[in-house]
Length: 189
Image (cartoon, rainbow, N blue to C red; front, side):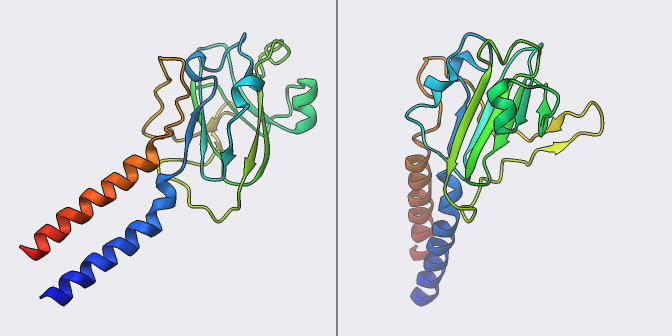
């Protein structure tokens, strides 16, 4: 019985280590508690942050705004009408699935020029596992908007502190340890 218990615990540990990278992904709320709106310096917001493959961006905004992914040249000139994807739902989640620079603007005339634009440099390789709570942007059947699945945690920070779930690795590791101990206790009792 002890050999079987050890094998089960070993398989659980291997499975936990394989699943761990998805627990390490960070969800960034763009603009923190200010959200996606005019009057926010998004260059300052991105400074000091490292965006990696597997992370995601959450844009929270009111009606009258959009989140449009655009080319680098359209970003630089605030050109609207050539969007790669567009959403106006009020809560847009963008999974960062590949390394490279991503560019986002509000396509409402004049908003990009007033600072509603953000670019993020995504580092890492495409081999990093992404959290299962994220969806891929895809064109919707009407209006040309993108349909994006939101992660379970999208609450903006109310303290003005970065709401990037920086404690998620600790929580994930703790959950694994507690589960492992519980299984060991069950097997050995």
